[in-house]
Length: 173
Image (tube, rainbow, N blue to C red):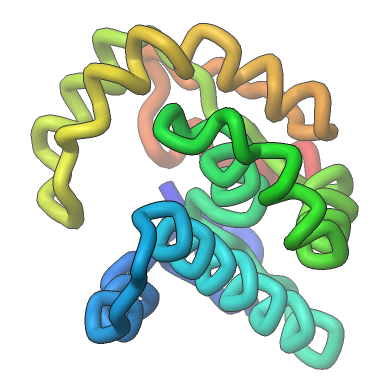
């Protein structure tokens, strides 16, 4: 879908989701508590996106594939650290506010049936999916609404081809 969107838009820079570029350096560090590692990981993801946003101000249009507000969502809703979500928010307040301000302007939540998403996840080998069952049961039901509350345009994608989804997004830009 991102490739189709770039064909329509012309000169754009696509920031694909590459979790390894963040996770590999973090995996070499030592942490005394699991929460410290979690916070360092989410901070690294958010800082990576802020760096890319700074580039956006100087260059052409940027497209973020499954990024920006999604990392804030996980930071604030990850089940193992829910009791620390207020602390996490306070600790990263400037970064979160920067991400959420940008997300309000041009963020799209591509909605589909849970079964369709699950089928796509089965073919995605870019990361471990051990968290998926928990996400599907406990987080997915309010995931879309959370993004909508922070300004994402909700787009139904069920039954659409990648090209049709790209055309739908392009018409909203």
